[in-house]
Amino acid sequence: MVILKNPQTDDVKIIRDRVRFFATIFGILYFAYMGIWRHFFSYAFIFAVLFMIGIRISEMGFIEFGDSFFGYSLGVLHVTYAFSAKKIVVKSYLRKGWVRVADKG
Image 1 (tube, one colour):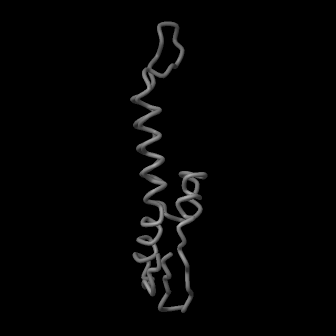
Image 2 (cartoon, one colour):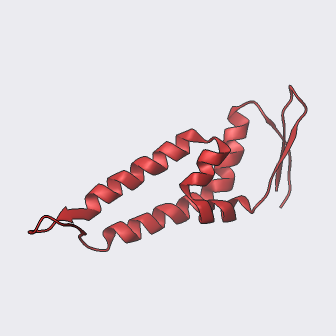
Image 3 (cartoon, helix red, strand yellow):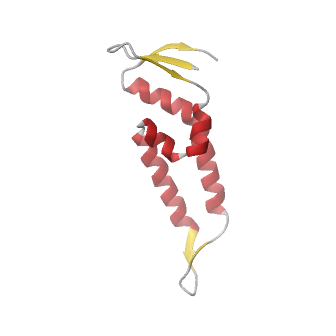
């Protein structure tokens, strides 16, 4: 748990470990909800690149997925962002001028 404080307004924000849970469940939407647009767009860009690498057009003109590269890569992307979510959220608040008051656990 990380406790952050806004020195201008004296607001206090507690970032708990369940941030990872919400990022796992909601994925890219969690970063949009938190207003962390840099990671929202980077996640979307990496997803789009992996999607374009993973698809191919069949002989009959249908879109199909080549091998399991796309699925594995998307899984690794999702898990990586989920486990990094707490650090990403804390850094976004620190960039906005918040100050770390305490770091418990």
